[in-house]
Amino acid sequence: MKNHILFAFCLLITISANAQVFTNKEVGKKNQELIDSLKVTDYPYSLPIWGDKATKKGYNLPYSAGVSVNYLWQESDIIIDNLQVGFNNGPMYNLDQIVRFNKAVATSNTLSLRPDIWLFPFLNIYGIFGKTTASTDIGVGVWLDDPATGSETQITSFGTKVEFDATTFGLGMTPTIGVAGGFLALDMNVAWTDVPQLQKPAQTFIFGPRLGKNFKFGRPDQNIAVWVGGFRVQLKSETKGSLSLSEVFEGGDLKQKIDEGIAGVEQKRQDLETWWTNLGPAGQANPINQAKYNRADQILDRAGEFLTAADTAVNNISNSTVQYSMDKRPKDKWNFIIGSQYQYNKHWMLRGEVGFLSSRTQALLSLQYRFGL
Image 1: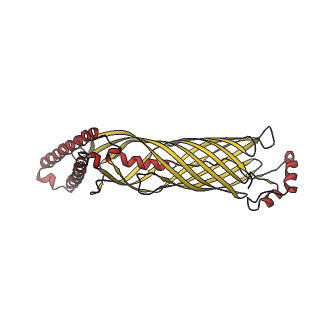
Image 2: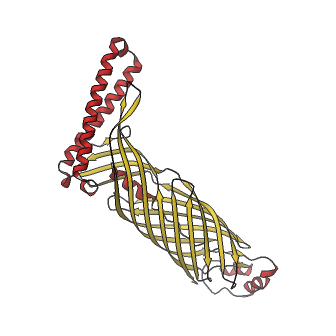
Image 3: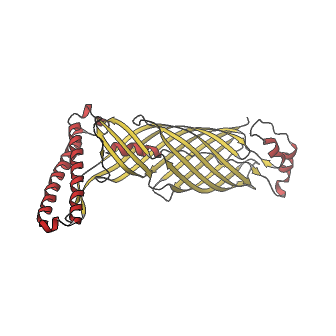
């Protein structure tokens, strides 16, 4: 099962890394010289559209094109539903009532390139190209009903940590507005993460609102910006894939865990029949007891069939494959972010940002160069 959670977690490789530059409406007496200069100077570049009109109204525009290099570290939790597993292209087994993920933590390191242009004075559009190395640390338990006590019992468990690589590409846009150095930016992008073990690239949608303020110092174009905001991740729900069983599991360890599970199923079967027999005719006629028995019986049948198929696959692990299908979602869609950017001049800027206050934490470092186009 760890294979399935592994590739679900790769979907949390998300990128939202636009430097906080924006079109700013200059106001105030201390900026009057700059305002007058903007109004009388011809705008020298083709982009953004209506750039000349914006400067004539006293708006100070950033350079119209840029490229940034971004490093993103992220640690995330995810929830898995509708998990189905099969071996060697055989029957798929629904494991929702059998398997629990006791621990599921994914860590990713992404290096990305982000070219962008200002299409309009208040709209930036960009592309994303990224490479990721990631690891997934999970703990999985197999649980079965105990109708006698109304509880569930774990019959076997295992844990693993797996490393993998991925490639991300995407498109985004950032509407912004700025007045007197204060700004609002609404960053959003859609990205596709290509992992070789998935049937098709995994899709994510990111929304990152930010509210902040620029503080000028030193040279006229030198400033520091600070902001607060949010980071929201939306994942496309369904994921399907296939991989070699030997890529993730060590045969001996997995064989031992499967044997523990098969023995646990047999013991639970005996316990179920003993409980049913001890009820007697009157207890067996009770609809509630019948429902408990039928539910436990069905789960035991499914668990037994799945573990038997897994045992057969592990006996020839080097030639076996595992197929999977699942729905997934982040444990928390939102997390809080704070960030800051140092602008050396209108060409160069360095940005840092951290996200926290949820099951997802992240840290971003970005270097951007801008130029006129």
